[in-house]
Image (cartoon, rainbow, N blue to C red; front, side, top):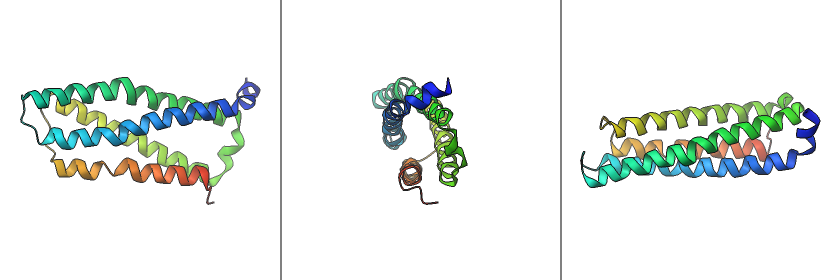
Length: 148
């Protein structure tokens, strides 16, 4: 089985990159929706529209993309286990775990907005919007440059 994944490594990598791009699109867009949603009046048409947009983005795009990114990434590691001995891979995986945690935090905020329980300001979400960008930069540098 490992040989199959090793022989199809480039296909796994392509599928992994597609999933990551999809995941990152949502990770960068959802906090921006929160910025505007935080400034909208509870119960307004605008607020209700944001709830629908946020829920669909999380359930239809972000969750499946994150799951697929993890699956294809883990299959690549299974096909090429030597990567796990590389220090840059440990750093990359740490950043991926942090990205997954950020995803979980965004999911929590989707639920809070859906229940009209958000207590955070638009400014808070402007700052939160930068977290996936910083993590993405680290992940790409570790994966491409392999600095150590």
